[in-house]
Length: 164
Image 1 (cartoon, rainbow, N blue to C red):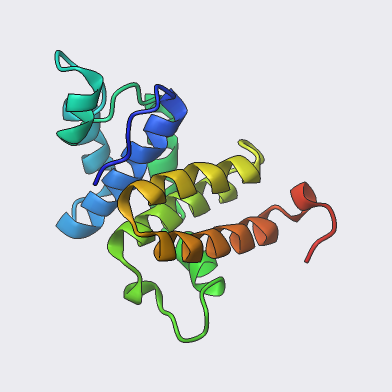
Image 2: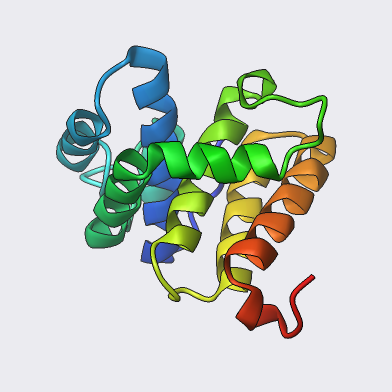
């Protein structure tokens, strides 16, 4: 199942980033290589209608600079992203045990949260939960919500008032 296009370029960039991180992990290609492939072949609606393009794995209306920034941050800070994710998993869960799509969602979100104060942490949480809902079941999305919320509170405590 693929998420429905929203007509929001920044959301499209995040969807493409999750797909690219997933592809990079599955193929062993660098994030940079996959980014170039996405920009050439998958981002933008082309001649097809947006919905049809989306169902074929394309991402209409993706904001390319944000897409590139997420992938670059996820690649250059991969160890830090993975450490943050691990820190917010239950003791009996490992990063490797996660569904590969969920790993890609968490890595993209961690990259954005670590990469500065924009966008607000709540936007990051909501955007990546919406993406997760397009690919994963509701129970997994509840799990994702808990991890994303915990990670955001840790990485951006000032946005949530008093630190936990």
